Length: 417
Image (cartoon, rainbow, N blue to C red):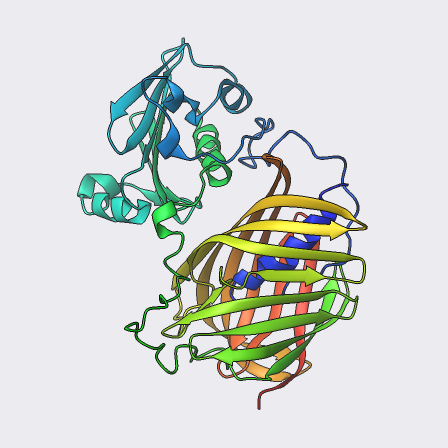
């Protein structure tokens, strides 16, 4: 069975974690070829794509066995740089995985992943020094990244999937070095110590405090039992769907999307001081039709889906790892899926949709979801979306483009008891 049907189930969940945007429509796009051994292009400027690699846990690499130099492979260098290293030298140090790659023409590449501390903590501590940011420019990589160019050396410092990553290249094209760094977005597993923090539930002990009232009070989303929103979907797929809040708790809620095409998505959220977080590991999620049932267990979840009161210029991100099991016609497919979203709030804009005219906060989001089957990358989805959110109402409009086409969603009507 091709992975496309599983991809569609995941896409219905994917946009759920992107600013509470409406889910991608589960109508079938053109069926792809059989799963390829190639991963998505690491850079739009790269004509060659290195082979895919299984998710990498940098803590498990052994310096003595030269495994640290498996951070990047010969096919990676061949595809993106046009040549392979003449030798590789691992760096032996506790709480760090690093390797230096030397090339016959005198060029060099070095890669370092700090394994003993959360990446954002390491990144922030290094950004305190002036030389770390002098002449640096922001780079769209991972959760946050800076790039510097000095005397032929291209240096990238980034937080990727919760890990601190430093990659330097000397003697190579700027875009090729960036492309090498982008490989780690798909290859690094989420940082384990952060995985359960955002969605961890209080223990069952008698002395645990009860969840505070009002944890789900969000400026842009009325979390009220029975609230519903009806949307029109157009573009690559068309139809309508209705989102309903089926259960509301002091520290979370459940919701459901029912599509006119016959698909239903169910999910569960956590709330922390007004921040909304999809999806909770304790309840998982499901997508089903008359012919297909897909159930998902949330392995890890970092970050937030939508802040309590976002302000223009504010940024946030979320990484989720799903373990999926889909059954179609008696055939079961199991997958491991990595979803990465990053968002930034813009300004208030006037938006007119069938439900009315509103003053709405514009939010720009990028989404990437990689689907692994039997350890190999079977499908990769990427999208860029603009969404408009209204205080006390919620999402009223969303437009986006992805490698599966373009979609527009507008609010037709809503009911908040």
